[in-house]
Amino acid sequence: AQKVTQAQTEISVVEKEDVTLDCVYETRDTTYYLFWYKQPPSGELVFLIRRNSFDEQNEISGRYSWNFQKSTSSFNFTITASQVVDSAVYFCALSEDTDMRFGAGTRLTVKP
Amino acid sequence: DAGVTQSPTHLIKTRGQQVTLRCSPKSGHDTVSWYQQALGQGPQFIFQYYEEEERQRGNFPDRFSGHQFPNYSSELNVNALLLGDSALYLCASSSDRGPNYGYTFGSGTRLTVV
Image 1: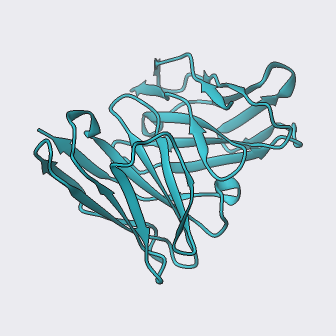
Image 2: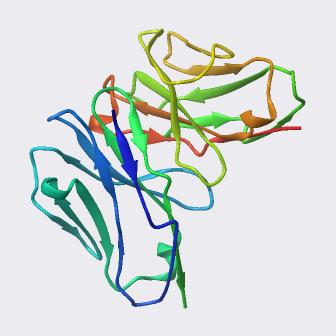
Image 3: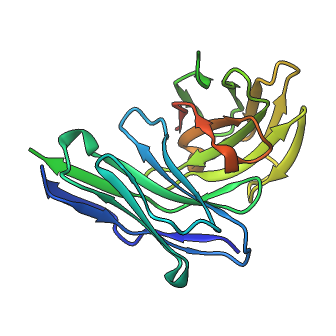
């Protein structure tokens, strides 16, 4: 069965600090996809990244970076030099087939 | 290019009533999935529609039903509303049967059952 755990319910940092959001997943499939989404107060889920299970290469996009480690079933997300606009709820998600299983989310607050 | 459009944005219903939520997918997308997001939780998969048929269903009772029209738009119907049905309902469209090539989410319909 699919399961996604985001142990950090809320994180608060001061602007320009680096912050890492943790994600641990469980799946029996060898082929799966992992995602991160951002949900601002408006409610819309904004796609950040997709990674398939055969690609463990880490990725960097501007201030965002992702660390995928199959050995520990983790897919962590780091924001470097955080900004106030990064304040939102962030969700990690897992997909094996047609539906997507989300974690409970981490609420990130970046204070000026 | 319009993304996913959901209507209405907010809705208040009384326990026991029925409600219909609507979703227009992103242009070029033919698959629509519905998710329920309770306050403080992650979205939970309700069901997915493709070619006007329900292709997969999550762990939701039969009170939740849906429909997809020939233009790919979709409706989510909930009968006999319970207080626990209060949530943000998100519609996601894709150009594939599944989310693996990327969902586009709408802003959701916030349903409050009183």
